[in-house]
Image (cartoon, rainbow, N blue to C red; front, top):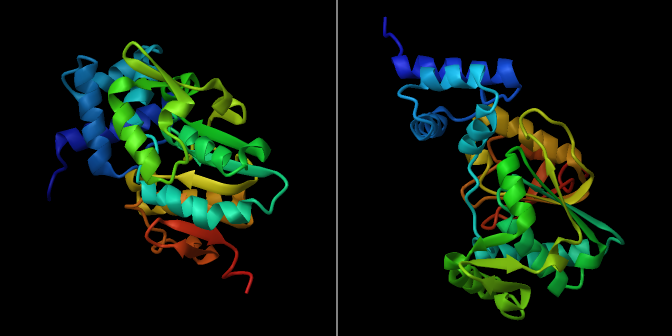
Amino acid sequence: MNRPDPEDVELELFVRALQLRHGYDFSGYARASLKRRVQNLAMSLSCHTISELTAKLLREDEALPLVIAGLSVPVSEMFRNPTVFQALVSEVFPVLASYPHINIWQAGCARGEEVYSLAILLDEAGLYDRTQIYATDFNDVALGAAQEGIFPVSEARAYAENYLAAGGQHTLNHYCIAKYDHIKLDESLKRNITFANHNLVADGVFCEAHLILCRNVLIYFTNPLQDHVLGLFRDSLVRGGFLCLGNKESISFAPNAREFEAVDGRARIYRLGAVSAA
């Protein structure tokens, strides 16, 4: 009989301890990427093994925020994959314009780069004043950073190039100021954004949305968990609402996929209801 690797056993015990002690369920996360993150987290917290990290998690309450921050993947950039934002502007915004009030849910917002990108393009399309954006994440550290709207000035050039490639009508300087080694986005962009903690694994429907963006989050989940989250998005969208995923993600495998049809397969934009309503 093949015996499991000791570190794989440690990982399963860590996942179970995190769920039992603190209520965070990572059992549906893809094991390879989760293992790498837990290993890196253990090293960063001066733990020689995952078992040492588990003991710290169980005994030291102050370790939980560090663990959650380390396990989430708050990596993004403003106007990431500009062609996706082009598609949103050309194919989704005209439909959103038909609603008197627009609700958008940015699930897994990380540090807010894509939220502010969306706010800028909505403003340029004349839609932002009747839009409410709900930006959620389970990582409170990332949410705090998102609310500040401050990013390293070293990223500004890439952000500015992405903005123009996405079809921006001005320059990014129109929406931010540079100070020392950071850029700070204009406070007016926050006027219709609500930041909140929400766990896609454990929490239910967050709002009734016309558009949901959840880019490069599902790739870290197992297939059953991906389908669960897709069902959550289905239940959160109005009939005819839109879902935008990351460019490496697909819903074709999932049972809940039958509720959606592709609007732009390359941009991973889908619409709810056109198939099932037929």
